[in-house]
Structure formats: C-alpha cells, structure tokens
Length: 212
Image (cartoon, rainbow, N blue to C red; front, side, top):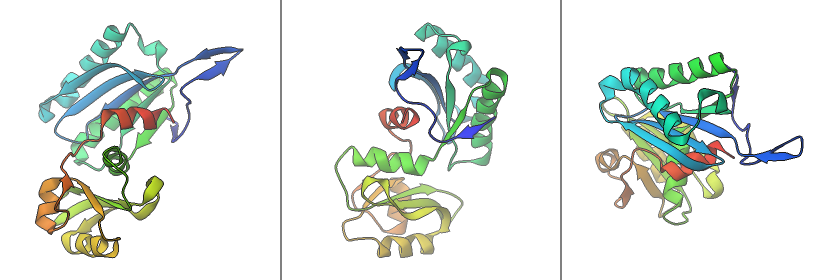
C-alpha cells in the first residue's frame, strides 16, 4: 500500500464539484480498539472493542457496522488512517495488517499517525504550553516518549528510552513543561505533578489530523 502523510483536504474539487473525503480510522495500539469513520473531519460512526485479545476477530465486523451506520460502503472510502504506534507489537500488527488489506484491495492511500504527536495535540486543547513531554509505558524501566514545543515543533524525537534517559530529557525542557500520556509512568519517573493521564488521543484531534 502506498504510505503517505498528507494526502487529502477536507474538501476536494473534482471537475468543478466539491466533496469531502471519507476516511476510515483504525487504532489497535492500546487495550481499547477503535474504529471510526469520518467525512471531511466530521465523525460519522464510532465503534470500540474493549477486549484486546479479540481485536483481530471483532474489528472487521466493527468496520462493517460503522459503514452501515453511516450509509457508506467500502467503495466510498478515500483512504485509511491508522495509529502506527507506539504500542504493543501484536496490537499494532493487527491494525496495520487490517489497514494494508483494505488499501491493497481498494487501491486506497494509507496514512500513518504517531500516537505521541496526537497526544501532545490533545493536551494542547486544554491550554497552550511552552513544551510538552509525552510518556507512555514500554517494558519495565523503559518508556516511549517525545517532546514538543509550540505549534508541535519537535524538541525530542519519538523514541524508546530508559527511565533515566526520560528524566534527563525532562530536565532539559523549559520550566513548567506539561507532561501528558500515562500518569502512572509520570509518577514512576517523578515528573509532571499535573499530568494529563490519557493514553489515547482525543478523537477530535485524530480526525482533524487525518484530514489536514
């Protein structure tokens, strides 16, 4: 499947007519699987799978249900947007395999999004910050992290780091840096007294970024 980052605009002109692209969103990076369908950035249907062990079995059915609810078919899709990490290897593989399958079969573009970046944008909805450090759990004593400045400028590129490296990166950021992602990880590291403890990005941010 062709992997692209920015391919669609909320409204596209074809032979003088305007239409809004329909995108399928898949997220299997965490315990809760998410299937969303949006048109021009507006949510049409949403399905969640709460049992991580069943994602491979139930998510294709959730896609069919979301399309039916929205009055759409697979042929109406203009692209597939999938959260490409960080997360468990098995979980990410399920979402990426599904997304690539749809794209190969239907000739659609595949868009990959980074969960750390989306979490930083989600935190920005609560208020503007000078810097934001996003932390998510990895193996014992390790974290996934990234740091961003205003307007999502990258201060520390997304990476897999040890706890010690994470503390060092946090100490290099401006005073008053916002910490978001996993509150449990932030507490373990001893950083971010006021942590946005949400390990999945806000749906509105995810949809908006897919249609940029």
